[in-house]
Image 1 (cartoon, rainbow, N blue to C red):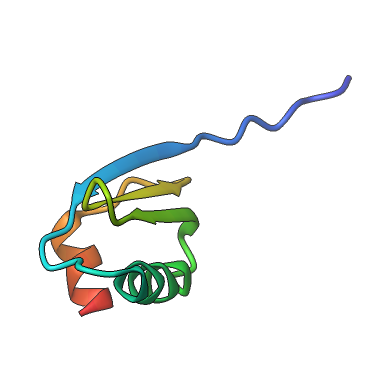
Image 2 (spheres, rainbow, N blue to C red):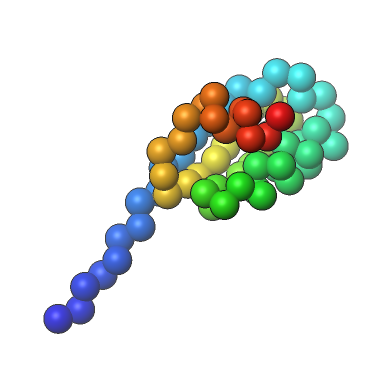
Length: 68
């Protein structure tokens, strides 16, 4: 019997204050993508948001403490 592994993807969207330029996008992405539990990150300067994908639920305060 073949069992298929189903991977859960949880998507998060956060507003980011203080993101003013393309370099800010890159810095945010680089810091967050280093976290082992993040599978995808995209910072969007025009919307001042960051979009994350992970297989685990994450706490916003924990995330902030790890990237600040």
